[in-house]
Image 1 (spheres, rainbow, N blue to C red):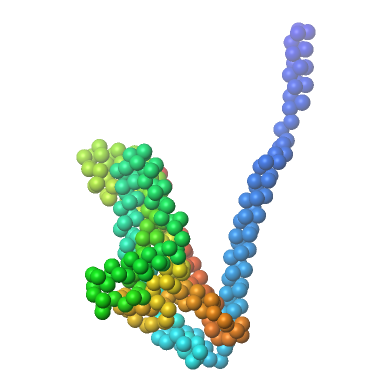
Image 2 (cartoon, rainbow, N blue to C red; image 1 turned 90 degrees about the horizontal axis):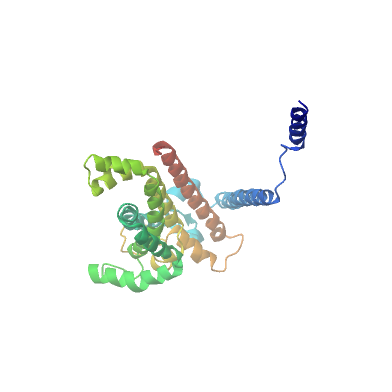
Length: 315
């Protein structure tokens, strides 16, 4: 009995010494503070950009020479003469972006399917970094590539008189090459996230690897692929140096991709590099164009989030 009593007293004292309080961990506190600070800075920066764009755009639209209706409907962009229709800049932006996606989407998706379904782990380890290396090339290099290689190539194919030296097709094609790594990398991640059991079930039913890829894996990863496509379109809308060097340096309301036409980002880059007065219409128009680009990109991101939520597959 005495032994049992001493052992009971020992266990009771040991339970009293054990503290279940949360112990301070300096490393976790520092990491948590860093993450919170990074998120706060990102949100604060976005809010600051929106405030600057809105404040300067309000000044632009409050100018007597500017009409909001004409801004979205007029086909002439000439602020020095009071004509501020954004349609020429918006049209060329959409055309170059569509050309870019016509190149980036099939090539990027095909590369993603190959890396995810056909390539061996060793080959994937070599090929994916090489593909993503394209994303690290400066865009100004892509711009000179469009002028020195793509434009002469288009001239040799379609004729010297058909293709102008500065044209939207050249800029769009090179932008598509630049966007391929984005579409391929994001799509490959989405395809790789599809459970292996779905592939094995398809193989068990007698489907080939090609049928499994296009009828099972791609539909299961459609939300991630759609997000990759929309991110690529947003990247094309925001590209500056390629279109500034290869597309042209003057607003032109035209739908022929072989003609020169200035995009919104190209116009902002060209105008902001000159000597502008801070109270001029040209200066405030930069922020109006930036606000339109921001709204377009925000809309695409919202569509991307809706697609991801709507078609996301949870296994």
